[in-house]
Length: 276
Image 1 (cartoon, helix red, strand yellow):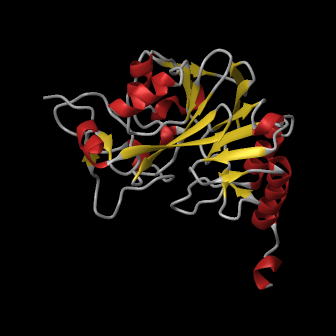
Image 2 (tube, rainbow, N blue to C red):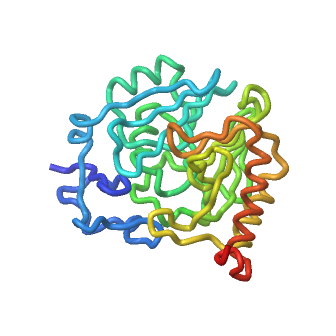
């Protein structure tokens, strides 16, 4: 009997098959990892028996959805209200009957946008459940583990997906690494949805940037400078990061600016900082 197997480490979903895939290319890449205990596979039914989804309203028109206990990487999704309908930002693995009913009660999903391949998870299931297109950057096409007609690849540096909601290719963590700008978010001052293309760190006063978070591979200074330059034209006071409890809730544009400078100083310095 065919099943859509899901990687136990990154939650990437694969096309229906009778046996699990031989490996997960996303986890074999240097930005992720295969656990020391080896590659494991999950099915949708197994996940539904063990996990449930948790909801948090961050501000009017913005709902966070996260799975408990933590599943795979543990990111959350964001459901943002726009004049054209709800857009799902990033994706989580668990899509159970309760989630479908709750999201339909909130108006359904008109489109799905995902920041980078680590968060693709079961995006095709979500697209099928709500009849929604998936917007992915063309530069990350090679990382799609479950191709589907619902996926629409876009090119260039920006793509409006709804009134006041714009996708911005920042690169960095992945070539097609994408951030979303929500003009009316942040209680009217603007908000960014960043996944971990821009990582909100625990003190919530700074952010940071990496090629690989688990493997501690930094980005180059020029990559981070480009990222900062791409976001400079946009007004925003809030950054909603990858996880349900990670957000910069005030002064986010200034926090990103000073974080870019701090990071570049660290990776391009002469070593004197390490002697202090």
